[in-house]
Amino acid sequence: MIHKVELVLMPQEAEDTSFILQKIISTIDIHESSITHWHIIKRSIDARSRTPKIVLLIEVFQNEDATPDIKKVYTFKQVDGKKSVIIIGAGPAGYFAALKLLEHGIKPIVLERGKDARSRRRDLRAIQQDGIVNPDSNYCFGEGGAGTYSDGKLWTNSKKRGDIEKVLQLLVQHGAHERILVDTHPHIGSNKLPGIIQNIRSTIETYGGEVHFESKVTDFIIEKSTIKGVIVNGQLEFYADAVILATGHSARDIFYLLKEKNILIEPKPFALGVRAEHPQQLIDEIQYKQKKRDPYLPPSTYKQVCHIAGRGVFSFCMCPGGLIVPAATAPGEIVVNGMSMSRRDSAFANSGIVVAIEQDDLSAYQQYGALAGLEFQKDIEQKVFSIGDGSQKAPAQSIPHFISKKTSSRLPKTSYIPGIYSANIADILPKGISNRLQMGFEEIGKKMKGYIHPESIIVATESRTSSPVRIPRHHETKEHLHIQRLFPCGEGAGYAGGIISAAMDGQNTSEAIAILFGYLHA
Image 1 (cartoon, rainbow, N blue to C red):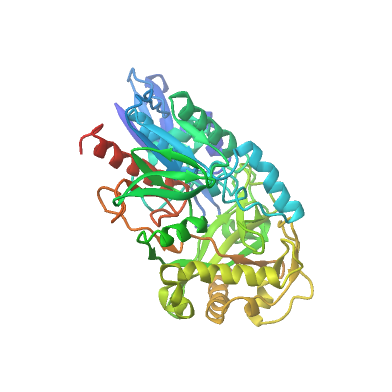
Image 2 (image 1 turned 90 degrees about the vertical axis):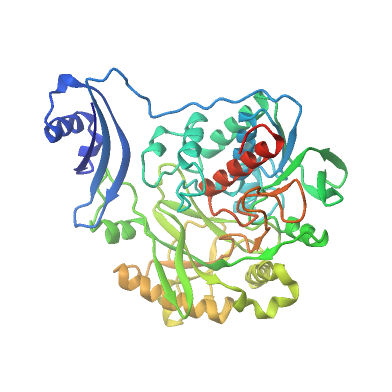
């Protein structure tokens, strides 16, 4: 017999397997000798009361021979050389698309403009310490995409878009901790992800796929409305039976190329704002209602949404025990993002607090057509850079002063390594955004008592929440509406919003290609 048991435990109890076993026995009233196996299938935190609890959902096997492993191992086929697919971008969409192609024996050829995960570290150090931005290797571009060095949170609302469990299982198969299979909000960490990404690359190459770094796609080879291949670095030609476009939300040159080639693209809503940072201890106190966090509890998170003057204002990519990092993809711009290491042991918590941007907000940019949002982003990022000292130092302001429209004479400590300087953020951002942010922070402060704290700051600007462009495709076939064998995919195409949803879209896209090629029946 198989039982499912829910236990609500104190944090320390939830880490004690002997205690859990005794609770199982007393809860379902069975003898210990009849239990052949048990394992946790879901772990979550309930912090609604004054004493946070851990909720465990446990599967218990009574007098059953089977001792199932929560891990699954997926197999891949050696490519047969008959069909190949170019994948532009080695982020989660691109790499998981490649793994799915290997399941069917189709050869993936991955072209990544940036460097491999190991080499990429030097360019991240250069932007952090010296303010030097490599436009092809940075926090957004390079092996693993933006997710590799900006946190690795594995959570999505897109539960109907694909097989979330398979994505998590594949990450575990390539080196992630099994805990991500059971945590409600799983997290890997920017120090662990590079190794996992390199293991995925090894799988791709072992089964006959190719991965090419520092290979920037500069043109498409199109004949009679069908894409035949691509040109790399202005000279090398790659040909294949299909092309997956998985370049991420910041590959602006690809959007310009699509427009130049008269390939249909559309504007898409996005969001823009600031990154808010607090002492992690303060967020723990607010969320856990404890002066000092229980050592068996993880650093606390928060998620906030409100509606201000017809637009959503919401938290985005909250990083407990994390760091604010410079995420510019070109010289002459300031962009910030957040990340956490696996232990989430920084003294700071940060989150994007952003305002939804609709086409009605871009009237001054309508001459750019589908690229109006992109140009709007660029203008703000370049404006922020222009008022600084030419480095990656970012303007900042305490949250209380931002709300009261006062200059911060002193700025609290920050995790942002390039440094910050005092500025009135409301003078930097468009009025509609700054006004909504000010009212949004007031609303968040009402819901989270203590959030508007003298040691809390905002850093500008959080502008790369998602792609401002969508590349339209058929719902079923995933092909571009007008260009045959071109498959827009992931965040950059407007069909995902994070590691998991991008990975699932990559899988779905390759599945559609396998059907097209006759390797799989619909």
